[in-house]
Image (cartoon, rainbow, N blue to C red; front, side):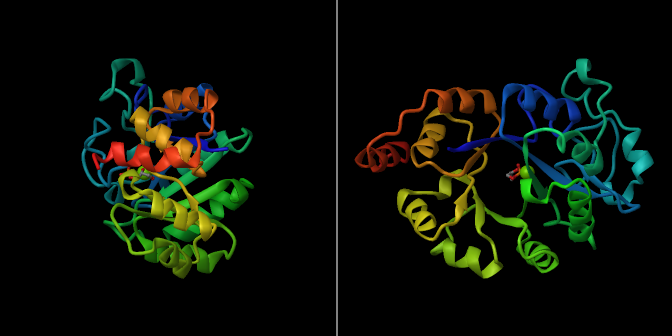
Length: 259
Ligand code: G3P
Ligand code: MG
C-alpha cells in the first residue's frame, strides 16, 4: 500500500516544519513526516527548510551563523498566522523525542546542497540511532555526495537521492550510490521510468504531489510513498482507492502530460 508523507508536516494548515505542523499531520493520519535539517553555528541539527531564518521567522540571518539559543528565541509561527506565534524552530532532537513513541515513518532531508555543514551526516545518524529510529527513517538529499557519506557510516540505513529532472535509467544511478530508494520530482516519472524502478526493486517516493489527478496517478502505480502538502486529500483518495487495469495507466499519463 502506498504511504502518505506530510511535506514539512501539514504545511498547508500550519507553519511548515514546526511541532504543531507535525502534530497536525499525525492527527490527519499520515504514515510519515518529511522534514528538512540544517546545522546551527554551534553544531546543533535544526528543522528548517531555508538556509536563512528570514522567510519563516521574525529574525534575520543564516542558520549557520546563529547559535541554538538565538535560533530558539525566534518566533517561527507568526509569519503564517498570529494563532501560531508561540511556535519555535524545533531541533532534530525535539522531533525525534516526539516521534519515536508514535507509529510514524520519518524522512529527514539533509539540506546541505548550498552549505556543506561539515559532519551533518554523523550528527543526524547518531541522533536517529539514539532514539531507536534507524529502521523507520529515510535520509534524503539533493547532495548525493552526502548520501554516499551516510552510506559509509551505515550500510543499511535507507538513503534516497532527491532529483528534479530526467536521469537516464535512474535505477542504475541509484544503485551506484548504494540507494534502494529515490525521491524524484513528480513530473519526472513517466510510466517507463516507474516500470524500470519497479523491475529493479527501487522504492519510489515522488515529491511534492498536491494535485488530485497526479495523486491518483501515483496511487494507480502503487509507488512506495507520496510526499504531499495535502495529506488529507491524499489519504481520502487512498482510502477510496480501487486498483485500475494496467491498460488504463498509460492513458492517464498521456492525458496528464497532454500527449
Ligand atoms: O523531500 C522532498 C522535498 O521536500 C524536496 O524539496 O525544497 O521542498 O525541501 P524541498
Ligand atoms: Mg524537503
